[in-house]
Length: 424
Image (cartoon, rainbow, N blue to C red; front, side, top):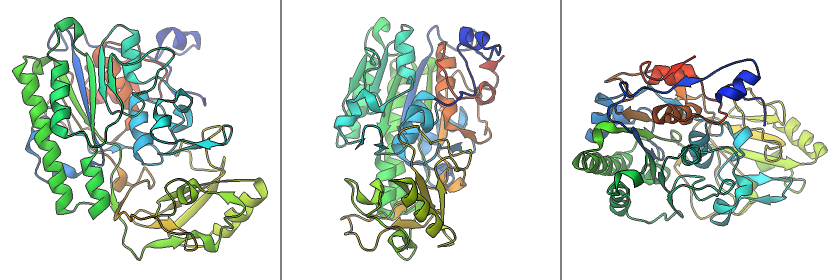
């Protein structure tokens, strides 16, 4: 692992001479004897979604809690990478999930669903549910990235393999059933995932009326979850956190760059165009090959198109943070938001996305939505944009957990909670 910015386990930090820690709220800071966190993942919910579409239940949460101006995804701004960074508080260079289907040069194989989802070789770091379980708290996870993996013998108390077509009504009912258990068996941390907004965004493009309808569907189910917690007398002690993984941009059909006019595909391997998904319209390409072939491709790509950039391994911008030792690409090619990369001479896959994400994470169009309400949060505030690697530390603080090593910033957690979780 690269050096971790914040060492938040007190003994480790003090041993290094820098005692960075987070004070968990006292019982007077949080309502109820046992704070609960319910994290709801809404794939593709953009930072400005509530400014564009009606979502009364999400807006109600924002009104009684916080809605930051946006949450910065890690790079690249894709689903697997970001939901796992949210879970672990780590950048991809450390947790290893550098894209949705990483290729590992040492293993000489690529990540393949659904088998790899339960293969611990692909998943590093310590997800928040493992931290909670190791400190005696029960957890229940539905369809979160990494939740199907065993970490040194530890798992969530409740988990289930991913079922893409599981009806949302059933998901909501199952989550609420977790909280029908006796108090000693209820989850203190629970998480559930919904894909619909992202799925529709890919199909129709960003910010379409169809996306608004998808958000309305998710909003209704969030309302059911809130009402269910209230009916069980648990809402006052529950901190509901809505997180997303990325934003979305529309890719017009005439905004495609065909890279095979500069790259000799016989000398390199590009999983995004040659892997299981086949050729398509991609926001970025990870290129693997021998030094001579990589240098040739890099030189050919420099200045080749005004909406495309390329970097060699070890030369990428500092904020990318996905140069994993065995999975980081030898060459990374990135399109500007709204553009796509493809290969004219390779057969095309069957599906073309009008909505695309995966672009540079600091571009506001890629910023994700975040809403949180509950006793750990102030009411009706709009904090500044923050990085999603802080969510792990935020949850650990609310639950009074000693966090694993994380790249989150205690000062950010303090700002998000209005000082209820303070850095020292």
